[in-house]
Amino acid sequence: MDVIDLRDFYGRRLGRVARQHIGRRIHAVWPDVTGLNVLGLGFATPYLGPFKARAQRVVGLMPARQGVLHWPSEGKCLTGLVDERELPLDDESMDRVLVVHGLEASEALRVMLRQIWRVLAPGGRVIIVVPNRRGLWARREATPFGHGQPFSRGQLTQLLRESMFSPSGWEVALFAPPFDWRPLLRSAGAWERVGHMLWPRFSGVILVEATKQIYAATPSPVTQKVAQRVRALAPLPVPARSASSFDES
Picture 1 (tube, one colour):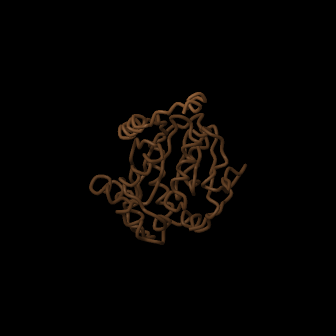
Picture 2: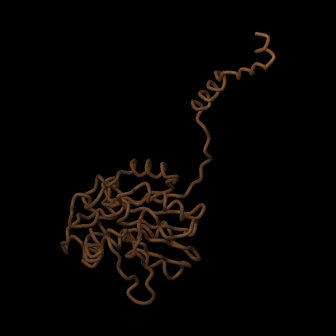
Picture 3: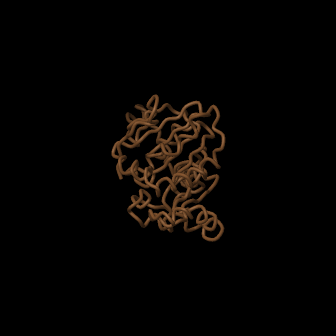
């Protein structure tokens, strides 16, 4: 979906309900960002508003294939159009990164995660919001969560660890069926409460918080044994014969 489709979705009743319940989970994980630099990647601007008052800096970057919109509606524009494989930010310049409508649609998934790792400060944190493979929202194309690749918790864990992140917390949201029907949306709060208690594995989206890690590169035991064997079998150099020895022969 392009940026116009995303904007229109969040302008409808169903989109406003989704923003309310996902936003509540995001801000429960990050209740205070005072003095921090916050980056929203993908189409995260519907969730960045509450951070503006306290964060030192808030930036929204949107992938080139998706398009970009001016945000916020009033004042200085804080959004930019970027290549997800090369974010125009300095190394270790961001304390928090929020990824919404980004990971599931990426054509360079691991490269984008490495870029997020690069711009995060040591100990920085990222929240990634993705469609749940088990949920109804991933099966309905009328919402942005029905497009791209959905994920399971196990897939996210493996992907993050391969990209030098350590998952530190999980949240779920969106248990109401993804239909823009007024009586159903009025009961969305009850769906959320019951869903968290009875069937959390079938949420519409998964939210994972992860921290940036720096690992020391050490050779595995197998590699060490092979290296020792190679050194043991290396031939010794043969000394050159002197000129006198040739004369004697």
